[in-house]
Length: 591
Image (cartoon, rainbow, N blue to C red; front, side, top):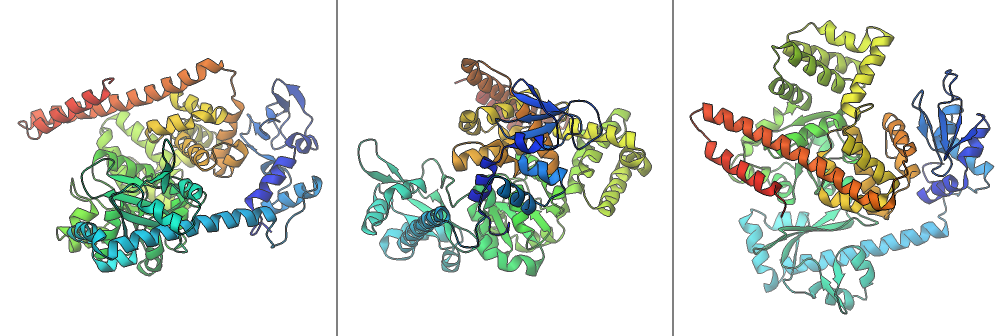
């Protein structure tokens, strides 16, 4: 049943059901401010720590940590599967479950999506024809040739070119009798201030973005002449979600299982160059960090995923942020490190094909790279250094579901630290009390169970309860600077939902989280303080500023450390570091 049940139907059942009525069948509840309070049906503590929020249709127990929506409650209390919970609620609230025949609403939605796909197809064919035929595309063909992209790659990835004029695509769409409003929704055109429309992509090489069925869901465009921005990308739409889409996957999917690994890079030209030199088991992210959805998409074909991100500090941090995602999804993550200043495009075109192939074959396991970074960050010879390494290392290893692999990782960390393996092993397993203590410590450090960074926690709560500020928060780019992986994951999901639908429904957001995160999310939902309306925007901006200031201080401390090291080495590289420090200070000054 769940295989063909639409999101709309699930939403209808969720909207009809009343969690207060359902919970009241199992728990005696009393009114407590905005919420209802009672004894938890899931554990034996006789304290009224179980809360139900009728307005948000969610429950949470502050004792055992269980929480969720009405479906989660029934699945927990009755041990139902999700389809069984759906069926029970549908019967109770008189919602007819559909057959495999689509409802009128589904048909309408499907018809709109088909129109959007058709418009993108028309635009893609238009751009492709401009690139491959006639004089209009000559400059673009010459530019691509200089980048090593020939006819075969142009055809494989259906590359295109957009005229350097304001209404080239607009006129073509009019000729094809296309809805310009829908083209606007797809981000292909924009309305003029007075009357009419103009092209978004102008004077650019066009990269169509395909789904697994080779349908065009969006576009990227790289300017040929000088100008800004260098790259333009389609916005999120009903058919395009960056966090769920990988560039080049429609070609790569035929090679992933065959070569038993996937290479993940950033950028259109990196991907095209990888494919050109035979690494067709490569995909690229689309202006967003690697997500859980990306990993789940790839692990249908292979569990061996290799990242090739920039080798600068930002690239290293981006790589490390992917490690918990790999571990939680039980995939074997590795990384390729290229020489500083190189990316796959430049490295391969300089003749480094055999070297790159060797680096892929000898790719560094991300867990080993993480351990190496721990050894650099802390002093493994000092007691305090060993304690911090043990805390962070075990915290990450705890995410590994496979007990055999988890034990190997513990052993590897113990060898690096030159401590007995049993010390780390005991942190996880020696007794129930110790396990609880360690888990609480892990949550404090990795998920902020008790010690979330204040500015990050408050910002996420404001995103939940005042989602109209998500656009402001997203525009400042601070979510990727979150120190708490859990808060970052929640914030990214809220941002994703808001970009898709222009609103945030906490019940809907729950479905994007794993069980542990669901529990913490429910706690945040129940922390709804009554702030004055005129204070909220100031609080949002204050939180953003604190996170940015923290990033600045961290970057500056790292630079000052490098400057001191360079001074000790007779000034090698000192001038460049001092210039970088001045640029950092300049960027930090208010304009």
